[in-house]
Image (tube, rainbow, N blue to C red; front, side):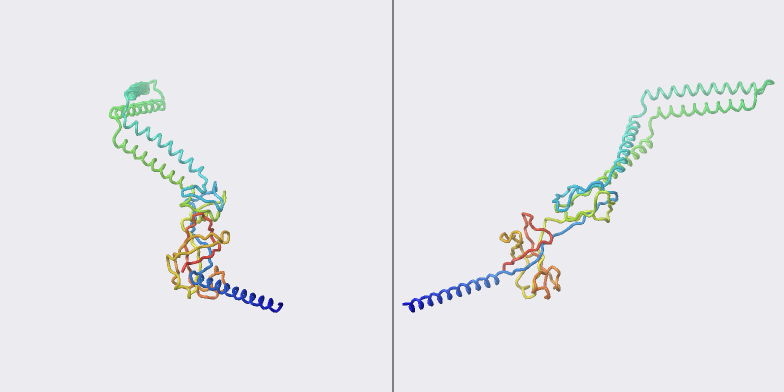
Length: 333
């Protein structure tokens, strides 16, 4: 009886071992079939970057974003000190207002009240000139008489008469100009001055706008290279901005596998933080020339081989991929 039980147990053991071996062989075959249907590569996430600098030179007054911040196109990232520019702009605006008043006055011509004032000034100047001339003539008569005055007193009277006559002539010319109205060349000169001031205002406003550093597109601040108080210039980078519109995984493939892939081929990207949630992608670039021992190659098999760069572009809608992040790529064959 015992011998029979032992025989049965032996048969069962053999059957179980055979089933186990069969299952293992089937699993290995399935793994090989899967491996034959996909190519697994290791790589790192890559994306484009933009170096941002001010177009003008001055000290930084405000830094408005930190490293890692997501920014939108047109968002102000930093500002330079604008105090001196603002003062100049206010002066220019005041000059424009005054010049606009001058131009309007020239276009409107001389008012009746201004003509009346010019006439009054002329009468007063002519009266003063006549009086001074009379004084001079009397002094001349006294000087020529026996009881004459000094030559200095006579000279003073003559000088005063000539000055009063010149003032009367100026008042007479001013009245003529008031009666004739402004000349066209005066109007043109005033308008030219106004235009020059307006152009200066536009230049100063444009310059003021360049004292703000704005994001040229959506992205993430990767590096903040200067701080408040630093001197900025067009040649000095302030930020490095990582662009979010296109991301890819840079991987490398052996020459023996090169013929198995092509541009447009479907792929899946896996990262350590979500190994069970692949990100869809496709092969977008295959290098024409080989590289030897790239620093980023992570497998021992490829470290001493000639390999070709492959870029797998991904649609990272959830924005989980970060620059330099290690990733595994499985390309469907």
